[in-house]
Amino acid sequence: MDVTYYPGCSLESSARDYDESIRAVCAALDIRLHELPDWTCCGATSAHSVDEELAITLPALNLSAAEQIGNDVVVPCPLCFNRLKRAEDSVDSSVGIYDLGSFMGQGEWIDKIRSRVTHSLEGLRAVCYYGCMANRPPKITGSSDYENPRDMDNIAEALGVDVRPSLVRNLYDKALEAGAECIIVSCQMCQANLDLYQQDISKQFEAHYNVPVFYFTELIGLALGLEESATWLKRHMVDPIQLLKKKNLLRQ
Image 1: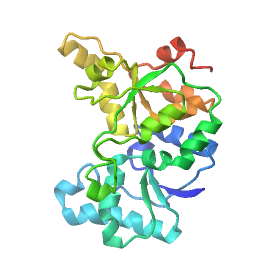
Image 2 (image 1 turned 60 degrees about the vertical axis):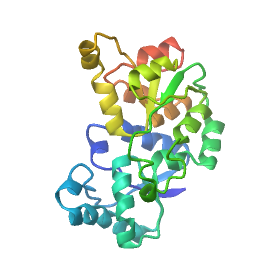
Image 3 (image 1 turned 135 degrees about the horizontal axis):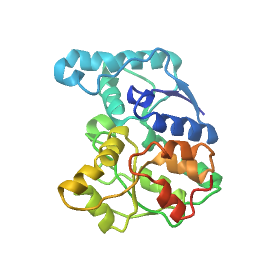
């Protein structure tokens, strides 16, 4: 299947591990990603607070370019996805715009993922954290299950992961209370915020948090036996390698 790929700014810098895992996993699943030529920043971080017209124009330019290609657009960054969806009406776009997690959470891809698992992640306990922007507000995203999104849960379960329900009000405590050993995300900002500050939070609250935070695509890569998986994981602040070795899930 051919889709237009809009990576967004951070996937070419601080979140390149996410980008690399996406490209490898999509290739393994016969999803042919075609990066949008000459794409520009969507303005997700600040444009909407500076100039409303600019906040619509920036993503609209990208949608206009995607319209010329004609393929549906897949967006791994929920912030970028949200901005592109907000601009959708202004260009009267006829192409579909999908958050990557929602796209890969469709039944046909779940079935393909399950059929291609060579290294089950059975025994790994996790909670999925969906963040703010992929499903809300539903009038913009079009999400029908924004109160209880399940796409990453379904993907993780297809990989053999024991997915635990959690409201993650206090994210680490709720994850551990649910019996999880790690957290799964689809957003590079969520990954950074949950991964970077565990040591500081541990010191502040006299606790000890050491909870690995995986991109869902990294777990797909592990379950599909992709050799480059270990490279992505080495870039995390909270080391996930030891957990995977303990579970006998890292075979490189």
